[in-house]
Length: 344
Ligand SMILES: *[C@@H]1O[C@H](CO)[C@@H](O)[C@H](O)[C@H]1NC(C)=O
Ligand SMILES: *[C@@H]1O[C@H](CO)[C@@H](O)[C@H](O)[C@H]1NC(C)=O
Ligand SMILES: *[C@@H]1O[C@H](CO)[C@@H](O)[C@H](O)[C@H]1NC(C)=O
Image (cartoon, rainbow, N blue to C red):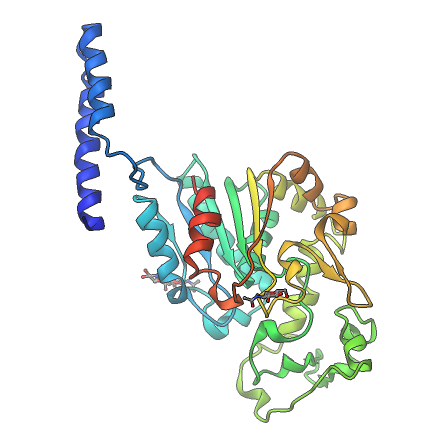
């Protein structure tokens, strides 16, 4: 039987059931009859469920748009029929390199609108960079009613190296940036480098940093602002990770504590997110060993509420081997076993 047929049949059957339940005979016995009928008409062993699902908002990854998430959407709709799945196409492709905070505010306004229209709660999913934006939204809009937040291989603990941008033509691919007067600060003169905040200096000293210059760096419009990696890493992650304390830090934490589940999915064969444990808030030390989430200061000090979520059983860490960074949203096993169960 094809899916359309199954769905139609289920809808019809469900309609029949509803009618029977809505018009129960005043007689107790015949009420029992309806219960029996209910049991008998439902096809057994069918994994297509007619329950009502909360709506889902999905945020795409860097240098792509909502088209890459078509299959993902289809799969959710197929196994959870009736689910409203919204995947905005805004800030797609090159626009995905615009400052993260702008994206948080824009997508956040969509999340809040959806929240208001769905008092039963919504689910929020972010793929790669989209997961960081999604988390930024939870923190920046602590009155959200997001029930479950799922991130598909997002570098919550930071990103080591430039692979994340997977581009060779932007001025920032070597971590340089413009100053206020638009002169260029080259990598080795940046604060990021001298303070070794991303480990770039270490890599360089070890001879592991290769800088390749591509002409035409002015080709893209950077709005006269400090550039991509600056916006993406320096002005964003330390804040949403409450590493740079601000008057908002406590609200950021409250926003995360509202969640019913925080589901962090990643795996050792991702090959872009480095270290891959960053998908679960892990990070490198100076000597390149990995600190896993529960050993990070962020966790032990509970500065972001992650320890609380964990103690409440609300933090779900999922590691799946064999999945490449660009396949998380297309991998049926990942979707069926690790995403769908949290879309209730
Ligand atoms: C992508 O966005 C466009 C414009 O909003 C929309 O029409 C389309 O359905 C979206 N695609 C997916 C897969 O969500
Ligand atoms: C967001 O995308 C939709 C659909 O493509 C478009 O109509 C809308 O103008 C966009 N909004 C912004 C602020 O770019
Ligand atoms: C995945 O990564 C692990 C650890 O690095 C490695 O041992 C394994 O061979 C990889 N598997 C695949 C399918 O690439």
